[in-house]
Length: 488
Image 1 (cartoon, rainbow, N blue to C red):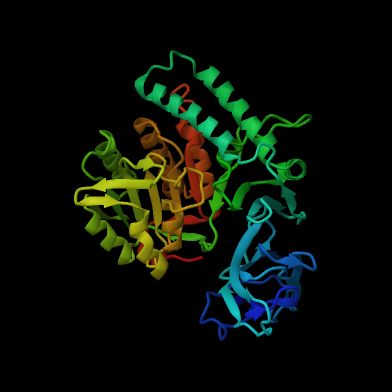
Image 2: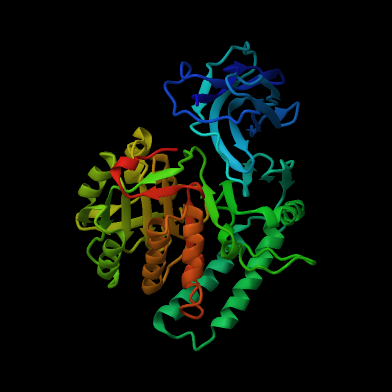
């Protein structure tokens, strides 16, 4: 067992058209970045895939290479060559994967200006707290190239497939997602009022067709084929990158000659990762705090009562928070355990907002916590059981939202909703999820999948079971005693 780091070195500045090397290595020890948690490398070593994302730069070589990590040794140094065709400040992201499991990432910057002399940059490093990987986990890495107006899709599993460059056929995919959202909103409203008139099957058929169309139009054909080649071996599906361009949970994989298995989130754990999010494999739940401001749904009190009973006496109850000041102090002070919101989340084109007793609480209020990483030492689970809590400005737009803010602050996992949900269904999902995660000791991915399946057919056409977006490691497990601690 020994600590490791992912190290990258890139020139700090250069001039347009000049080729510069990017050197990447996985090294032993903690002298290059402070003490790290140890991890085990098998006796025969481990194969790690390193990928490079360098928007605005031209790659002279492939943007992915494999490196062998042997016990007791630093890896070989990988060399990538990059060229900047035009001036500007460019960011380069280096990521490491073992199998389909994301291990860690590091970011570098290079300034390109006419007449600049090429200068060495500082060494950038990131901890690799674990080399463990989960057989069957597949990661879909989705990257955007703003300048070219394209997206890169890459399926990473036991087989490392090459990236596929993709132009959306109908332009911006948000148009398709908004049509689906409109259908879901009507369905949730009808289910809440009891006015679905027994038409649940018709609604499911309509959503199925929307999901199939989304699969057809938003996922490159090569990725579809690769997915089916891996399907029988896949145990978890992780989306890393531009997670807001498509509601991944609503994809309905369907191709000629392949078995109809349902929505992707119906038969596989679907988990998201945002850029810069730490890989956390153990979530400690020594305590719980509930956020229930005045004006919350009528079922919020029952939700708190029910969840307290499920969490049991091993989880210290920190009470119910109603004021923004107390909630902010808790987060900035490094809350340990579970933070569960049972409330309304107002959502408009300008962003999300929870109205607390002493004023509004919105994602910008987490800026200090995100900058200081106040939750990183405790790795709490944040469950935002409110309307569209996983959505960001413009719903699937790239902007400020609850999930990236809490995760950047150091949360170990985040769960939120993508559209308005029915209160009773939301309570039942939360109950089923905590039963699986805590009582049955299921990992995060399996617990969320089981919770979806539990409530899927309870209320006819109610689509709440598809509404939840889960961020974290699918293999992360929860522990209710403080002795278990948090970790990666």
